[in-house]
Image (cartoon, rainbow, N blue to C red):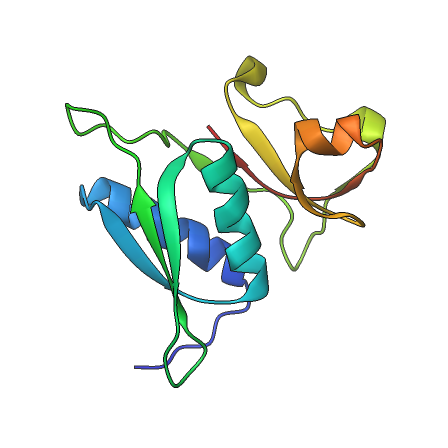
Length: 134
């Protein structure tokens, strides 16, 4: 069952959201360079436990290991796609959004790669706000 999607990042976030709602510990997502970078940032910020690149005959998979506490609650309480194919959201370094008073992160595509809003601010670059996670 091969489906094409116009917004692979929204698909990525939805697969994670669905896995969290189904109380899964891991989720497999079709791989791309952008999704691998999103996974790297999510691991660095502590929203997922780990991720693994799985090679296959097609495009490959990313297996995300979700971070949950003893009671089964996920480290991710919410995610939102900000910039989308129909309405791109670009911000300068002074307009980088603060997510949930610092409890969340904005993930951005910048000239220096995929960075959190805080990293972008410290490197003095703006870019496209891909999504926010809290």
